[in-house]
Length: 275
Ligand SMILES: Nc1ncnc2c1ncn2[C@@H]1O[C@H](COP(=O)(O)OP(=O)(O)O)[C@@H](O)[C@H]1O
Ligand SMILES: [Mg+2]
Image 1: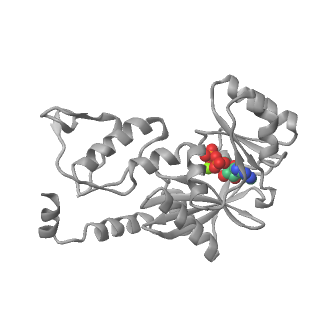
Image 2: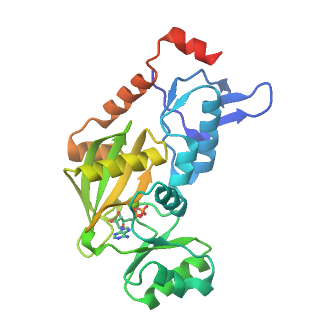
Image 3: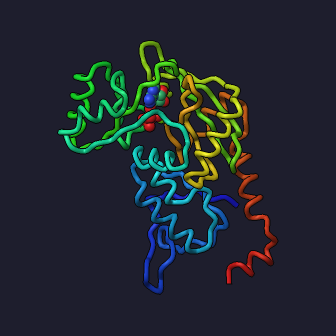
């Protein structure tokens, strides 16, 4: 049986006898598996609830640590770099005194300035001159929003590739193309989608990126650079409808197959594990 629960309506007790997880005055039953679908505005509350489910012995498709790390672009790129996964050259500085050094470190202009918590392309700006880059960086700072700078990969041609990874395999992939006059390929910025065939390196890069965050379900975004695929981000609650429509693949089916595989140990053995 599948149940959909509103993350923000769950409440829980911690360190009290009537702990556990509650919804509208009722204690929730045991769930074997949880598929987190946590909106970016409720990451803290959503991951807290996940930790509580985890403590009760539920299997999580995506773990709270991976979700949190993936939502901070700097943290995510640091983790990917540690696992030697290719990405566009990326740099970060917090002091305004270092803006010139920062731009030089990222390889100079043109470069992309991104809010660490950007999504749907909304906090991503292309700066073609050092002066433009410096003023965007300083504007974000003035708004108390952290940002990073990144080499602009013009050769991607306004396209990126969304790979849907389920249980360590790419089950669907689509190319998103930016609208005319736009470099961001996000569908929310008017981009369009079509199915695409991946190279072996692209498949491996996408599955390694998902594994870095220990995600059973991930939307991994790649840019096609001259020297191979570069990871832009890893999404823990990827939309399914758009990519299912574009590719004709049954991703929800693959997701349920994974859960069944993971919970396959016979009921008797599962009881043993719990005690
Ligand atoms: N370094 C880059 N070079 C070229 N295009 C980029 C680069 N970074 C981002 N883009 C484009 O901008 C889009 C949005 O960037 P992304 O990092 O995914 O931010 P968001 O999380 O807001 O979607 C990408 O899908 C891609 O099309
Ligand atoms: Mg994106």
